[in-house]
Image (cartoon, rainbow over all chains, first blue to last red; front, side, top):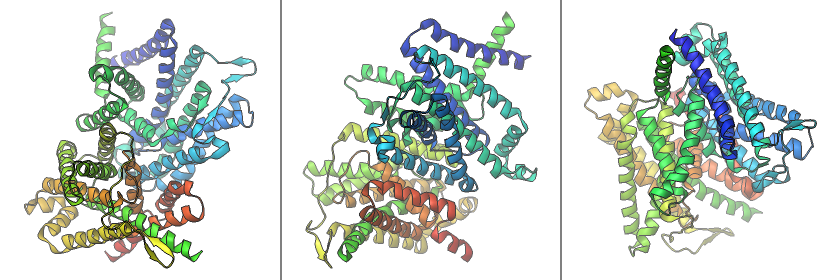
Length: 327
Length: 291
């Protein structure tokens, strides 16, 4: 019974999250919600990789960026229709992940962290030094909005609805994936790789698939991002952004279903609040205080709550379960 | 052409010396504590910037350097007590994220105190270049290589000859066995961080006169140290030095002969290549075979 209640309360929360911004109808809210939605898509993939396959990637901003740049280059330089460009923006990061993951996933977790870290820096250099193709440090502007034929999504409101609909589809897909044979095999790897191997699971192959899957999702978010902002530069795709995605996954709670959404929302809200709050407390404070506080929060969380905020999710679950019971 | 190649050899060795020292500190901390400290580059920058500040207060360079080394050693020790020591036994990933958090906070702190300006430190000895074979050698480069050499010899002597060095080696091989012998692992980890803070500062002071110092250069230097350590094999002390020199030379020749904009990209390609072809590093395989 409790489980059933939770299923509905989760869906209910999701529905509320979808509808409230529509009632508020402010472009600031839409913008923030689009960013949270896109980050959640990335962190969902990263969560599968980290929470189930037990691997960490410090290069997911690069897959995000590859998606964004692919969409931007194909539409502005080669005048592809936006939908076709979006499909390539999803597929290409997956292919790249397949190539770099093939060898490195055979190694211990620390080496994949190192390899993805290096890969992330490398791709950022390619964006910055890419000359005319990537537009160098100033980036690419004039990216068209997403659309088919005459139907174009130009408003924040419409784009918000699209992103969150895609997010719902991703969530349903991941729920099914985790419950599938492969998902259960991934869970087994998380518990004990040796035991899983003995049970006949090809761990390396499965980790590889999880890595590719997470890159596809990051590419999807990147493509959508390019069509939303219509201007991209190398700056959102730094190592710092990769760390932020890992942080979101960890804060939300690894291996939990709502964790990525919670993590993305908390980190985005936190940076928005820090931006407003810090100058109020310390007059004349610049961005450096935000960086320091951000670092301290990251360390504190890892020390006192390495399992993430998922316990808050459990509390919410209990609360919503009792609320449903009382009705 | 020959002179240019010699010139690139000099600058490659200088770069390589810097990377070697960072890689050495990284490997030592990793060997002792099992932690890959990504905040090491930030220790270096903090130490160099503190030296600049002490010097502008009127201290002679040597006093300013020693005071900065002491200060960063204390900061590193305090950070170890406040963070790493609290989560002893946590996964490598948790530790890695903690050091990244420390690096972010320290970078913010450096930005807050010193701003985005570039600073420089005076050369230890004459800043006039030595002309050798038609190429100019900066005397500071010799200091950098000397630091790498002294550190390597010192570390080897420490691990091979001293009681404490052997205690540390024992505790790495078998933590439980070492604890039974009365070796305190927590103290060893603290000492490793204090040492890494002091040595990173020394590296920062050595390279100060060669490259300018900015608040945000620590991250890339830390990554280069990582790459050097990976080339050499993450657990090998001599490998770290060799890896650093190889990386420095490859970078100098590739940026001198191909393109300087791709400097960092080339070192990353080397990292990815090593990880894919020979993840145990150049010396790693030899070492395991001997065992």
